[in-house]
Image (cartoon, rainbow, N blue to C red; front, side, top):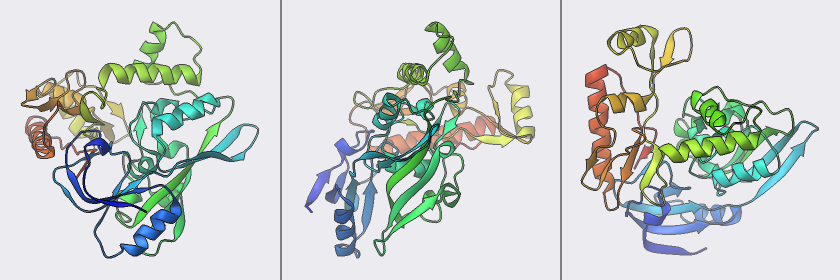
Length: 337
């Protein structure tokens, strides 16, 4: 167990913000994690995964624990399904590719989502009609207070749109160490409902797609819209798509007939936050060394040396403008630190 002091976190967050950690420890095993928690139980702790869903607006005056637990294994298998366990430090997209290599279906729509396995349940990650909860079986997590390992079922996690119990009642109380998901081995249920997927498959002249085809199509779509964090600092989608009442939507539609929408229930409609932000004139706007990406208005970017505070202030300006123009509140999907 090695603890270093005054460590730059620039390489550990996809926004590329050069915040400093008061102290830093790389966690490579369950035993090391338990040992660190036991010995430093009186200290302030900051749990760091892939760093893809946070905006650092200040230095971290705490012991940063970088969860770097690795390993993927099949834990149970039937003729048609398989349950795969992945450790929290595994990169999510690499895990998707591993599953595709073994012809395991169910998460191909979640290709190229940044971040690690351990943070996926916290956010209930999702894209193109699929969410983690659709395949989630359980996760194991260490109790920070007493270092026990507890198991959480799908029901225990209270999943909702980009929400879970780990963002609510159990926030700061557990560290997820592994996740188990159930995937199909054959007769895969493909989810191609999004028009962008259908268009991409048509462009590729694919009429009967495989799970690999779906993944490749989504990778192409995401790469065409989203900047590579290795080239331009970002966290992907910065805002959640707002869900509004049907009455509010009908009023919005009367003023903006071209507004896209997705039915959530008989009483609620989801509106793309990116459309609202673009309509408000922010798409492609640059402010000094930060701004809104030119291809996807949902993405805020750091062109090199922006501070987290500057990006946060831009996010607040966007939120206030959307509220003023459309009377809709948009919430951040990214954690503001």
